Length: 141
Image (tube, rainbow, N blue to C red; front, side, top):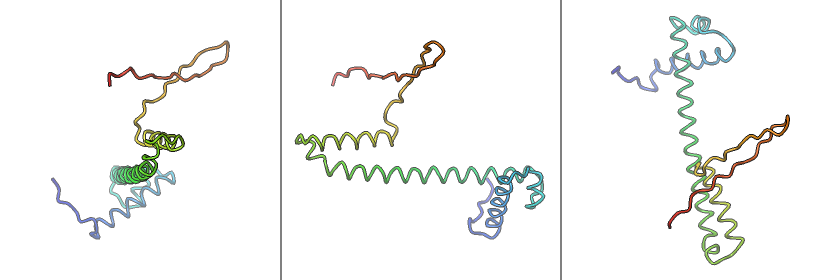
């Protein structure tokens, strides 16, 4: 296993700056041979690896950011649910509606609901799409 480089070392910072420059050139439409020549990589492979590494790193950071945002949204939904739960349990219709909306939002946010399937039907020369409703089986609870 190669030794780890300090993220703040001058060598690492220079490599990161080169990779950012390489990515900006790639976005501008340059091929990897031209990028290697302009940025100072030994060959096209070095330029390609730097661009791929940077893109993958940014994608991983985006996933982490999304996870944090989802966690914050779930906390907010929990707080809202707690605010109306007692009224809903007592039968307040407006509060029950609000609880259902909060639960619907949570399920959508967390991907808890099964996806809705659609079936395509052919009517003459016109294609019509209609929803297929998936009904879960009865439980013994």
